[in-house]
Amino acid sequence: MNKSCEEILEYLPEYETQVDKFKESLLTNLIMLSEIPAPTFEEQERTRFLLNRFTEYNLLNCSEDEKGNALGIIPGKSRDSNILVVAHLDTLFPSNVDHTITVQPDQVIGPGVGDNGLGLATLATLPMILEKLNIEFESNLILMGTARSLGPGDIEGIRFFLDNFKKPITAGICIEGVKLGRLSYSSIGMLRGELKYQVPEEYDWTRFSSVGAIVNMNELINKILEIPLPRKPKTSIMLGSIRGGTSYNTIPTKASLKFEIRSESDEMVEDIAIRIRSLADEMTSMTGAMVKFIEMARRKPGGTQFSHSLNKTSRAILEHLGVTPRLSPSTSELSAFIDKKIPAVTIGLTNGERFGEMDEMIQIEPMKKGIAQLIALLQAVDKGYCSEN
Image (cartoon, rainbow, N blue to C red; front, side, top):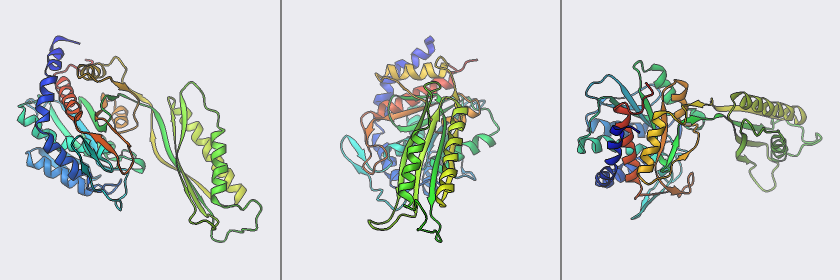
């Protein structure tokens, strides 16, 4: 770590103290954003809210693109380079659930507050924090709420932006609400898919082995679990969700299984996907029902090395804050940066519990460390301390 970067680290305690003064503004943005329903492909209201915040602080080029991304630019003094900071707009929760957020003295509770209400709130509050702290950058700071990120969105928003933005990007920072200490700089090979079992209306229930969708889906699951997985490259199959049936005494005609294949090898992901697709075709042939294999999202493995300056600096900042870095690969927006060969990291801002549940909880106190981390990392990138050149 060079001497100049050490000077940034020395400012971290002061950043923590100063950031804490903006807690009320941060929490206000957190509540307002989190209470706006935003399932994937329905992020429009959050996009408008974020753009209003960007406009209030006179960011340049405040706009929404064709995919629904919300964009604003804090101009740099030289304007020769660009740092892209992103947080995804969409949430796991459908519009018809109660999005009421509860604030207690030490925590915030409600659907999506950690994933990714806090990330968006930080994006909305960051221009004010930087202005009040008199922090300026040589680089342009591009702030963007990305649409169509989760599940079937397949990070379409960030991919569209990177495909069409013609100026060079020095580095990318993806901010997630949780967990503080999270540090991702690589992506693992991944395929998210869904198997849909549908019995046709004219189905002959006198046919041998006509037991309904759930029993046959269970048989299909057992066959998936029998697929041999290598130790190297590290590979896994996650069965995440199963649904089927309507009543106690009605033969189910529909069932669905959501799954994820992960591997360090893209070839292994493809091989397992072919096997599962073949099992679905076999079940269709055996039962006469229609079993569809639907690919929802795909990622390729890649990323920067452990020793890359951006990653070393990110670890040093966390350690200086007294936070142990938790290194893990990511399948989020980081993958889009990796595909474009842009150095990038994903960081977390606070701690919490019950992620993905209606009563998801995040802690208020660690937020100041999370945002201090972000400010220091932005300064390090801006000053060239994270460049390999």
